[in-house]
Image (tube, rainbow, N blue to C red):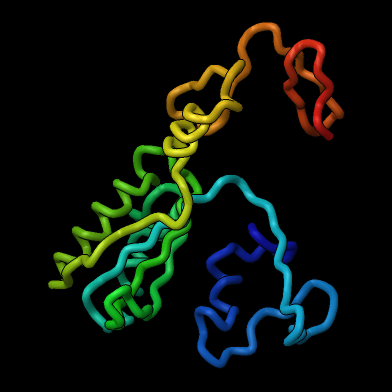
Length: 194
């Protein structure tokens, strides 16, 4: 759940004005109930790593996109592992409205919950409905892309990258330090940066 009330991220996002034009939106957990014109708002949260993956469909029939989104959701019988999905009308790069199936991939390294598998399922469902897929895209890196990016940085020295895992695993000689909740891994002779 993305909220202390137990609401999932998809349900919370649907209450915002981004996904509901003219909607009042969710009320903040604390602070003023309206945003300041001068300073706006700040939103903070934490969750396991989620890949945001969107698929644009060449239609403006929201009900068709909603049907496809429902079919891929993990909570639907026959849905895909770790997928939260919703559909909304979105203006594409060419200025034309399309229906976009927006997905939160909560198991982006799994066989069924990765972007390629979700794209294939959405494309198949769209084709069955006579709808062309315009494109699919992620708005943030996948775990494999993060590992590849990390491997290219000078900061990767001293780490061993384990395929399929989105975290570096330290080489032998690194000492775990613990505070009861988080384990810090630091090179010998260096203090943790906390």
